[in-house]
Each structure stands twice: as structure tokens, then as C-alpha cells.
Image (spheres, one colour):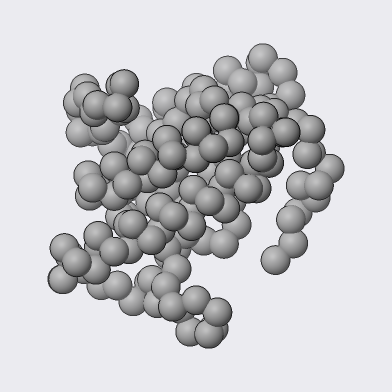
Length: 165
């Protein structure tokens, strides 16, 4: 698939990104799936030296605002690695611990890959100014309320620990 003109933005630093689970399955209702995703985000944060300015993990997708260092890696590189390796861990967890879960959504038939967790693309917007940053940050926080997610059940990383609100 094409890069959707991302070559035009190789020097940009601030992004609002959304990526979604294939078939919109609510796999982030499992605490372990959230932990696997966060672990991968932290791992690649060391490699690519990006800064997370805001994020939320919803039942079937996540949003984040990230500041990249273009000399360390593009938003495409970051998302490729986070999605690829979090998928492996999450799919392994689901296959081992959730025998009753309908896993037909993760099967691929095109011969290139056996399993797929994330949709192939991710949506990103370059954040061009402070006003746009605050609009996107507010959207992330209000997304929980709009979806009716019980915020007391969410996990947020605090110095390598998880804090329940």
C-alpha cells in the first residue's frame, strides 16, 4: 500500500495518530492486551526517542499525540514497529488465554501473513500549531466520555507502574 504522501512530511515532528484493530474487535477490554501495547510503545520510545504528549487506549483502537525526532525515525517507522510487535504479543496472549474468543478476525488468507491484528493503515495528522494540539488533546480525553468507557477501569503508566484511577 502507498504511503499516502507521508514523504512530504519527513521533517514534521508533531502528530495526532489513530490506529484500529481489524474488524473493530474490542480486544483492549483485556488488561493484558493494554499492557502489551504499552510495553511496546515504551520499548520503541527508547529506540526512536519520541515523546508522548497524550494518549488513550479505547476498546478497539488507540489515539496518541507524539513528537518524533525525524533523525531517529519517521512516524511510519514508529507505527510499523509498534503495531507489528504489539500484534505478535497480543495475538499470542489471545490465542493462549481466550479459547472461547472468536478469532476468525485475525486470520489472513492472502498468503502473505498468517495473522493480522491491526488494520493495515493508520491515520495521522500533522499538528501544525498550539491550537490544533489542544483540540486534539481534548478530543483524546473526550473520546472516553463519548464512548461511555468507565475511566476508573483504565490503566495509565506511571514510572513503569500502572495506576488505577
